[in-house]
Length: 239
Image 1 (cartoon, one colour):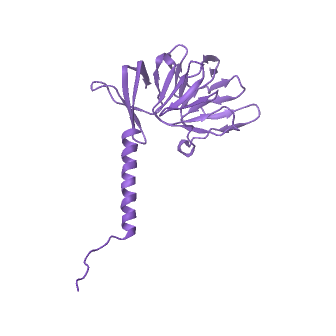
Image 2: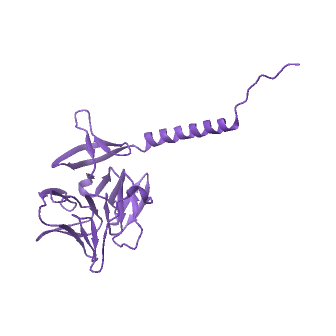
């Protein structure tokens, strides 16, 4: 009588191998499809440490889970983006290299995460749209921030630096380094400005009554104030 010498793989091993294959496919899909974005526009610019970089036609941004890097061509420098946004269409579109927090301006509403590689723009009906992977969300008012120094305004805001006031339209943004420097981008004029910010708290005042202390990351009303939440990855995605 012949013995059956065939050896069968345990079901646990088969299940483990299937899970491993699925994991490899997911990682490959994530790295290949979600980690690179090509931005196309007649005018693309990014303001980085006091220098304005302009890209003609298109540029590419990559994201490794921690840092976003912009690269336009072999002769162009690679720039690691942290507090910067890409500006396109003469200020009517922003591209987020990194994830941001969306705050409606009303602290009773839930915070949401705006994922990296999102487009933020004003559509033909004058709505502000956040779009990623062809998924669109219309937002009204509020602001975006990165939990640190970058604030993007989605409504009219008055920026105050001591006695000075600057009126900013939606899709304007600021980068505040406390007691060091202030960078301002105005979507209305499509211009950047940088200045020292010693001695005075920098605030953004909404017509709806709330105030953002950009130097101390506080949300303020006449009755209350609280520190703005900074845990971006803990939030549910907006789209």
